[in-house]
Structures are given as structure tokens and as C-alpha cells.
Length: 152
Length: 161
Image 1 (tube, each protein chain N blue to C red):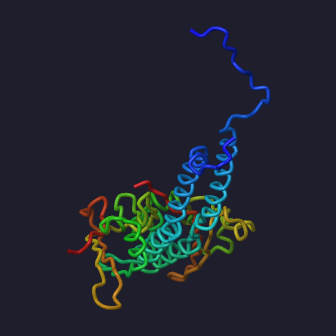
Image 2: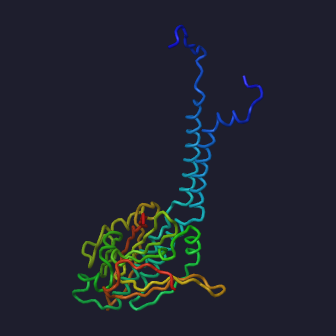
Image 3: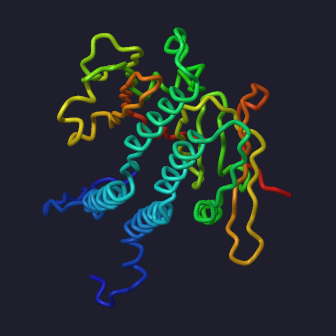
């Protein structure tokens, strides 16, 4: 019997437990971290508000400037590309919002309208939030998918 | 080769050193399931937009009835006249339009109908989340009273992109 109670021996015997525990806790922490900022909830909110209350009420020729400060904060924190946060699908009539790396949330609008020229602008002035600006037309010339790209 | 060496039998019937590993993994799985379920319950429920979307479509249809003027072709070309997307509406909405009707939901001769508007008249519609959310509004155009019934069952679409 090992009366000295060597720490090394104890560690070696329980190494497998430690490794598994560290992997499991890390995975859980990553999962909680990904959900804690509510990216999924905000995606849902923005997709429905933009589609349901803005595009469905818009008229041909309208230019929409929308403050998306909260959404862009979450997306940038989660490492989402600035050009990929908001996408208008002119073919399926959908607005897709991506605030997390794994997946996005889409919501369809019933208005037969085309979205063109969408830009994501950083609010550089003090107190100004980040915005997206897009134009609505009734032509069939618009691209199938219009991404709100960062204005350079 | 060694001769005469007898292997000692384990008479104590001890479990192996790592036998508790299964119990440990089960415990971790149990904790993980608990955490994931809690996160899903807290963040997973969808933002219910159906009442708003049925209200907005109802408004769009009434606005169109008022602005476009109703001729003999109007209800046959409702989607084109009102600038509505047939594909989106047919997969997510219920629409029924009646003229001078006291009860549009059960009216047998509507001017326009898509989907089963009876769902909008059921009592369960108000309390059961699985029923579509409906809006029933009226508008008077050229002396005729039009009832517009719109039900929405539209939900989000989760994309892997």
C-alpha cells in the first residue's frame, strides 16, 4: 500500500475523469456563451420586425434607413462577417438575419416588392447607431439575394 | 517458457479501476441535458408575430380595396392588383373576402377565399397557440361593405447558412 499518498499517482489514476470533465464543462460553457447574448432571439425579432412591419408596409420607391445597433453588436461579438448580417432574398421574399456563426433566421414578406442596394453603415458619429439602408423597387432586375454590405 | 507458474485468481471479485467511468459519464450527460434543456426553454420559444402579420395583411387588402377600385376582374387578380406574393400567402395565410355579409367566416359565397377560414371562427383560436391568429375587419367601398378575414400561421424559418 502506498502510505505516502503520492499526488502523482492519484492524478494518474484519475486523469481520464479530469480530461472528460474538462471537455464536458468547456463544451457546456461554449454552448451557454453562444446562447447567453440571445443571438437566436434577436435574429427572430429583427427578421420579423423588418419583414412584417417595414417591407410589408413599404411602397415602391421607398428608401428605408433602420437602426440595427443591437443586432450588429451581437453579431460582431459573435464573429459574424459584417457583410453577412442582413440578407434580402428577392426570390423567396425573405429577410434573413444572421447574428451567430451557426445558422440564421429568416421570415417571409408577402409584398411583391424587390429590395435593392442594401448597405450596412457604422454609426461613426457620437450617439449614432449602426444602420442598414435599403431601397424598394418593383422591377425584376434586382439580384436574387441582396446582402447588406458594409459601406466603404 | 516458464513452467509451473500459476496465475493468481482474483478471489475478491473487485471491479476494475475504471469501472466508475460509466457512472461518471452518465452523470455528465445528465447535467448536460439539464443545462441544454434550460437554455432551450429560456431562449427557444419563437417571437409570436402571427397576430401582427395577420393585421398587416388585412390592412394591405383593405387599403388595396379602397385605392384600386373594384371592378369585375378585381378578385380574380387580387394578388396582382394588390401587389401581394401568391406563394407566400398561399403557404402561410388564410384569406376570405365577403361582400355585405353578416358572418363572413361561414359565408358560402365569398368574393375571394384562400384557405380554411372556419379556423378563425373557432373558440380554440384564442386560447390554443397552434391555431392561426386571425383578424376580421370591414371596409365600405362604393356603398358595399366588405368583410376581410385574414389568418396567419406564419413562423420563422431557421437556415443553416
